[in-house]
Amino acid sequence: MFNKPSLAFLSSLTTDFTPVIKGFAHQTYIPLDLSIHQNLLSTSVLFNPVQMQERLTQWLHKNQAEVAFGGYMELRKIYDRSMHFLTDEAQKRNLHLGVDFWAAAETPVVAPIAGRVHSLANNEGYGNYGPTLLLEHQISGHQFFSLYGHLSLASLSLLQQGDLVKAGDTIGFLGDARVNGDYAPHLHFQLILDIENYVGDYPGVARALEKPYYLKNCPDPNILLKYKSA
Image 1: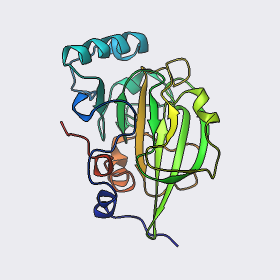
Image 2: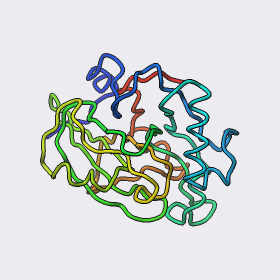
Image 3: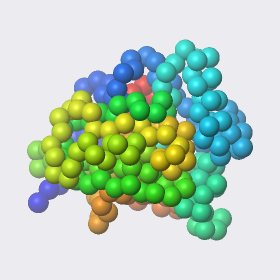
Image 4: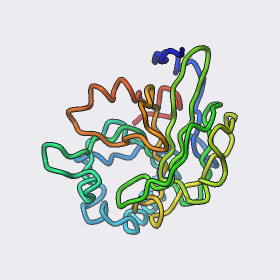
């Protein structure tokens, strides 16, 4: 029987910046606000992955950066475009539960710590994850999971359920808008304490009223990754 890890335990697993995408120095990361209050991207740009990628590339260049990141527990407008998240105003899902890392398609995705492949799936559909990988981590009597969404189709052939991975191993590549749910290329990374009965999937966006539960079950990835904060 495994225990759920405390925040202190999760923090103890890494001592410094621990990337989940490969090839970028920490100082080239820049925080990106995609909340409902942001004014960098118009609604039309948010809803168009090609235009969004172009705008983010320009913004990164202007700020002498290579990777945009952020989004944990942000309320976002981008999900209004897809019925995958929208039922009615009171029930819509627009609370982002992980952190996103925006970089070029085919950027390698790496495991931040050792784990075992729990499951893989192609979560197809407009606004969905597309190719997705879940790792299970069992450390010192504790169990938790990490999710990697919006990968390339080829990523699903790299590993199989049950495979062991080491910290720093390549576990996938960023997908483009044709396969990743129709988004500008990025990695959705999320920590999950209780995976429930999910296989190859787990909610990455929730209703605002569900925030108390997901704050506990999906802790801030920065506890583990230790990237610079905004």
